[in-house]
Length: 328
Image (tube, rainbow, N blue to C red; front, top):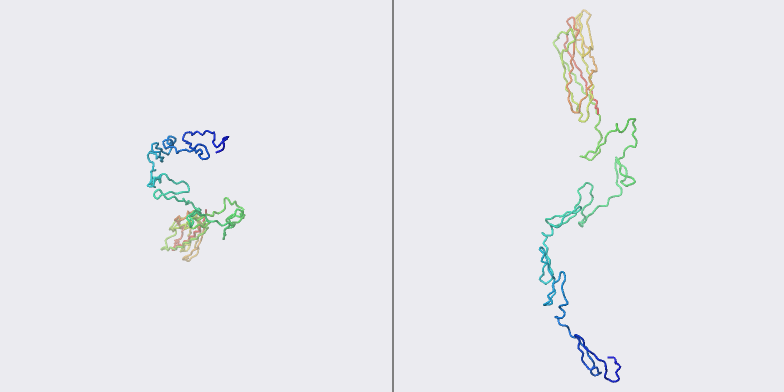
């Protein structure tokens, strides 16, 4: 201890012990002062300690513990090792989970997965490592007949079509349609215009009846026609040929007609003329329009007249021609 201005081996300084401190010795070299403090008792320290949220303190024993809430539904407890332990069953957690856009959640298994869109053109898939994977697209594409371009921004993929309309009519009202066949995925044009021709030749014989004096329908020939084009209506042009065999005694005559007289013949000689005839054709005043697949009944009604001098007939031949011209 430093000297206190002592003139001898005995110091004149006074040392006093405070609370909780003891002083021993006389202050000499042989018996120096020794200052000591004793450990305070627990009864003195415990009043200085208290507990806040989440902790409990027992002042009687001095034990500090975790404070477990008594609110309903608290799963926390003390484990076998005295530590805090909380166990929540999956059945309680799963109702709290749902999925939004881009995610799928199975509430039965608790598995969350990516929800891949089923929209056409979606390239995203699951990779070999089960992660989301989008294959890298090629910068260009190869084209074949009917296509041009490489798919880039500067050279987009387009239909390889002529650049000019080479007709004097307007393309907007006269251009043919090109339509995608959704079954085959191919481009298809309009159905072709296919003309069609039908001919009926029919001959009937008769037991030489007299030719009427007045123009009279003597028979009827019936023909059934069908527009077999499944796509387009048809304009039908009708042409008819009529041939009648007359037997003309001396000084007799006869005529044949189809709405109007086609031919008249007379025998001014002394001998009978047998089976005189002439095949005469006309385009009848009949232009028909027939819908796709529709059928039509057409009749030919031969007319005979101007019969004189016992003129008779024994054969009528009809040659009926139908020419189909697709329209629309």
